[in-house]
Amino acid sequence: MASYRAVAFDLFDTLVDFDISLFPVVEIDGREEKTTSRAAYDALYDGGFLVPNYPAFHQLWLQNSKEVWGERNSDPELKEVRSIVRFRLLMDLLVAIPAQDRERAALTALNAHMYGIENSVVFDTDRLDVLGKIKDADLPIALLSNFDHAPTARRIIDKMGITPYMDSILISEDEGFRKPASSLFLKVAEELDVAPGEVLFVGDTFDADVTGPQSVGMPCAWLNRKGAPVPEGCRPPDFEIEDIRDTLSILGL
Ligand SMILES: [Mg+2]
Image 1 (cartoon, protein in one colour):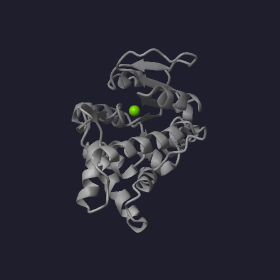
Image 2 (tube, rainbow, N blue to C red; image 1 turned 90 degrees about the horizontal axis):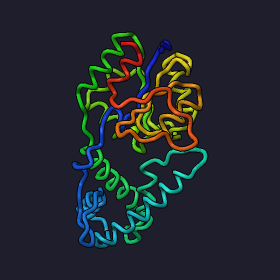
Image 3 (tube, helix red, strand yellow; image 1 turned 90 degrees about the vertical axis):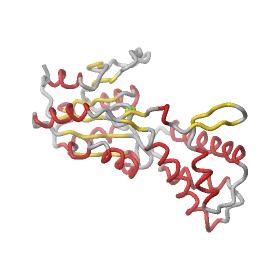
């Protein structure tokens, strides 16, 4: 068995889970959609900002998300787009809001959106036992998450009681780049004061959490709860696990 000197985890759908049933539902053109756009709209409306009717706002919301994420996801440099930047661009589409009010409006919409996200996250507290056992074995632990609003990610980690177990917490918004950027995985190893090959990385998204660590020679365990196949042409992960508890057997704990 390889000897690992540290462990690093992805956050969303690895340590904590999005529960889609908790996500806000709105009816648009007779169809139900899960979106935080209504919450953002209501916050803007209640804040006295000049917004169109909700269906028109939702269309602009979709246009903005598609443009921003489309550009982000095709960026070969893997730069993160901060949430505030996305919301500033959305405000530029809301032409009735005067220029001097747009920053305040962007923050209003961002906060309402993040509140919806935060309240859709659940945590299985058994996972703290997994983190505790790793800590008891004197292995440092890091968390590396793609997320466009670091304060929200940190609030979620705090609320779930995860923060005290972490020796390093890296969020893509703060780092400026998204997984699978190699630089992030090198930084994880550096922050834990070990070589990349001595860290076990655990995460659920193949591209981010498997090809990323592989690019720096970091062993990885793919949390593959649904038994998805390894994407064609990709190198399989060192380990495939169905439950985060399986991390412990890989570590020999
Ligand atoms: Mg994930």
